[in-house]
Length: 322
Image (cartoon, rainbow, N blue to C red):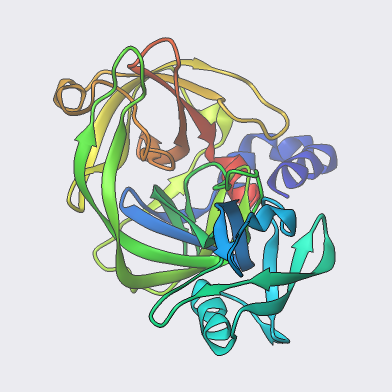
């Protein structure tokens, strides 16, 4: 871990104290581009149900299933997607044995299917992935890792999904912030895969990047001690796939000796960006924050009380959890 390395250096030799920053700083390529994030369930998640007619009687699938059951097998075949499940249902007449994962246990359930000549229904609402759009923070050439978002991507049941795919994305519109609601980027995830996801935790979504980086400049990362109050900027996309520089003022810095969020407090001062967004908006998460030509952190949260105020996480914590 990065912090442990700093601690060991301090103990071994006080004479090295002034060189800690340069020893442990790393060179990374800055992000700022939008990224589509798709995290996959190990099966098909049941999110809801509705009554169907089964053998001329009303039937509620929640008589047998439970919300957030994950269908992992059907007809003794592994189920990884809705497509897999549909194929198995099409083979059946009016019921099918499935295995669901429930509270970390495998439970056998009989799935009832209502069919006519052209259609079928199980009465279940299902999904096989969680999707979102965030901002790339950096690409680490030493590890080949892409880092983005600055926090986890979870589902409605607060499950952490670990594996998935990065896609290119396009920002099509901006919903401005109001006093009642934080605004958001409105975008679409494209079909172009740009990487594979292998980690999703409280400090970001990480994975291997396919795309060859061109015309990108390396930036050194900064320690907390190098960051100052005052001017800085972050990079994000507000239209199509064009990266925009957004001027901010850092108003407070929380000294942290363990990983926490919201270490950097800042205010958006870029009038052009404010006219587009009315403040910090959803979709900016992961936007790299730069000061004195060094990567110091990434945007993570918007203030609930002031549209122009936001928070960032120190970059050393993100690198530490890569």
